[in-house]
Image 1 (cartoon, rainbow, N blue to C red):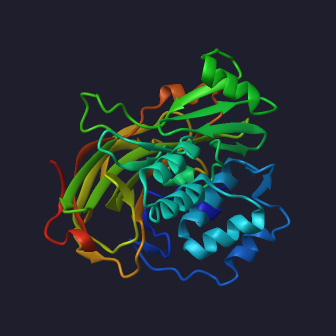
Image 2: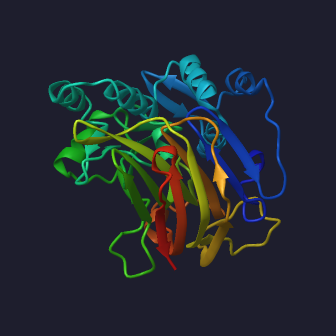
Image 3: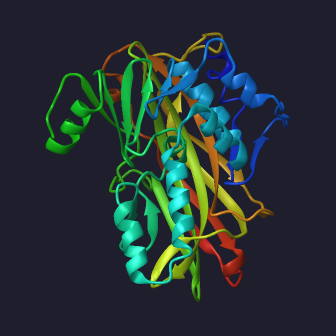
Length: 360
């Protein structure tokens, strides 16, 4: 069932997914594939739809469909992504955040900025560095969740935050929200941490970032590793990823806000402790208990963008996808973490220097 994704062959055909707000490019370590012009029609006009939007929430028909759609969605450029959302009657949290960033670029008073931020404090926050950032920073989830963070896989409700996936076998959203607010425990709700603890003594945790500032322009580089987790009521599906993002900021009224610019990266490399198959290659699925091994990548560059964007993100699937019917399976899995990670980035507005991550 997972052949469409090469779900069980990813250790041999690791692909780099380059995500731009206005352009998306798939770079394969083996070859380049041209996307069909009828891509959206094939996805949305299928007799057995992989995803539909019901009351503003995406419903994926199965765990396989979730990964199929997510991988296709990452390949879309900004216009295709917006058209995909429009045809489904859906607006993602990613789109909502992007709209707010654009609105903030035009503010001229602190009162106007405060009003916008107050109206959107459920999806944005100002961190300790006075940077406006999304509350859900993992692109893979931000592009498929609604404003409240919801999506369904089969009949199973999922809610994504920046560190956890809450998975509930319940009829509606109210019971799950009650659990999140009041801390009630329920045997119908799973809480899965998909990022390693930053305070771990193992390696460099799940994320590292670097900053370079030139006057009122700033570039930031983020490198993260995480475990994508879904449950369709029958099987758990888990897969580890590495993502790195370069984002440009402009200081407006003393606050750093994202803006469109050009980017360059070089000397990106990483080693991640991630899941690896313990079964033979001719199995259709990778089942049960994986090994944890060091897996890595090296991308020396330099690579420069030619289209202005608020950010640029690369997403790399690492190791093998794991499937299990054991009901408490995620409790037995470890989130991936960096054994080493490094990279350099700059923006058009910060060409005098580089944001440098160096954790050898």
